[in-house]
Image 1 (cartoon, one colour):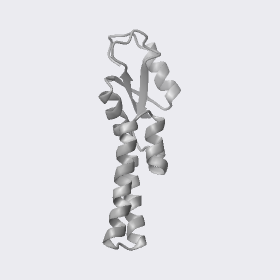
Image 2: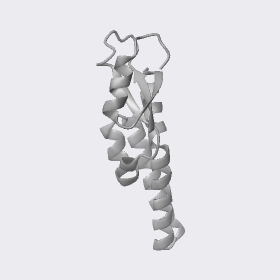
Image 3: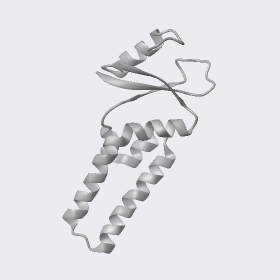
Image 4: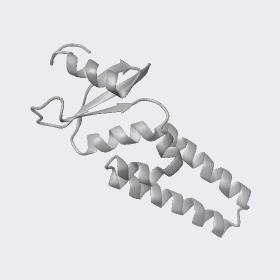
Length: 126
């Protein structure tokens, strides 16, 4: 089972249309293509920050004369860290835009998590 964080848009009347479910756990998309993953999730500032860190890593490695193997290892370590923190970055980007954390739903898939979220009456424990 995966825990899904339910984020709702502020001042939302439509419960189903204005909720985003963010899964806990490793974000493979963030590992494989970090800035594009952030843009896909409408986190433009996060994407810009990721590009800046990656650029700083590679330019810094070149200026310091780091071997290509060490530079690749640093890049891989950065991407693994990004994969581990990806879901939290996504929640933080939503919170920065005013979205509120409403609940946590345990489910094995996104469809099941949505069904559980929408089948629970508003104002009750989830």
